[in-house]
Length: 385
Ligand SMILES: C[S@@+](CC[C@H](N)C(=O)[O-])C[C@H]1O[C@@H](n2cnc3c(N)ncnc32)[C@H](O)[C@@H]1O
Image (cartoon, rainbow, N blue to C red; front, side, top):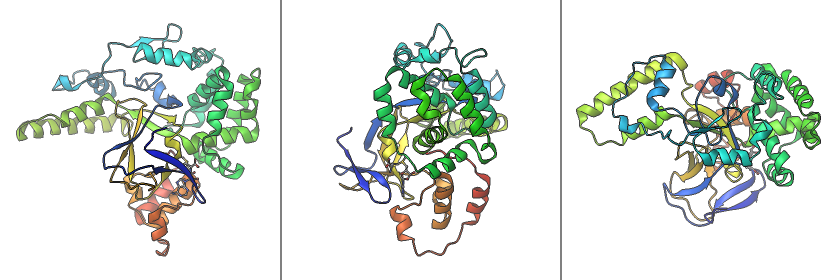
């Protein structure tokens, strides 16, 4: 673990990560690869191209916008800013899964890729699970059945080590687990949890090492571990291109021209794919998952290499022994009243927030922000990003 942090236990929040020494604004606090990470099932089905190991984009920004807008004539200016490296792309010789490099392919093989290689395709051992999952979990996805299958592959290969690691993630009570599992699948698909469980039992009937995860409580608890601890990951070659463009030194006139062009591309993308611009997925990170939420966080998560490698960065100077916190809510949710934030966290993450901001506003009137009410009614999904 990084020498910059230490783990302690808090009576209300469980484990907390503290700064071992003072940390400066913009300083890296933590850099971590996931224990397991996957692209979401529907995202993959919709041909969002990324490395099957690290989620690095596998198409140039130009190809990305051409595909998403259905317009093959788009030419991106400043092609030197389209930096996605496709020179080392390799594929699994059996299932055609793509990897950004030989080392990603090797890593996936080490993590027992063989276990699910070809098995999601029609006639594959896990195809039915995949189909049931897609039926009961429409986009926007917040978790993936592929994550469970990858976890099972790891358990098969390194049983003791994997189960030990999995047990270190935050666990909930049986009741909370059930609420979380319902949240993950969306309220209208509650009844399909048992269909999914039965399909998995059938597919894994001969694998005794998974029995404990396929009982009624075990299955719900597995979904809840993923729901409580997983971190959203999004990678996009066009977003990388836009970032590189923003770093160019340009005249005011050129800057305004390129900004207008990028805006026009985003407008077109909005018409075709709406918010679904990225290769979306999620990962379980052993240390990052122990960072608690705050409604006034002092840190944020970024993905500096456009892949699943995660970095936690300080948003301001952090004192020695101060808790490292991130926000599980987006900017808009964070700006709402204490009551709205608490309601959202309670309904979607099943916990009462004990952050400093909520504690300092404990005597505020129990008013729900107007915008909050609209949002609370609409939103069904959960995710810790
Ligand atoms: C991803 S885990 C964070 C680490 C966790 N504290 C642990 O012991 O592993 C998320 C869980 O931590 C707790 N938690 C996180 N932020 C909190 C907060 N601001 N107030 C109270 N509990 C919090 C909740 O139980 C939540 O479900």
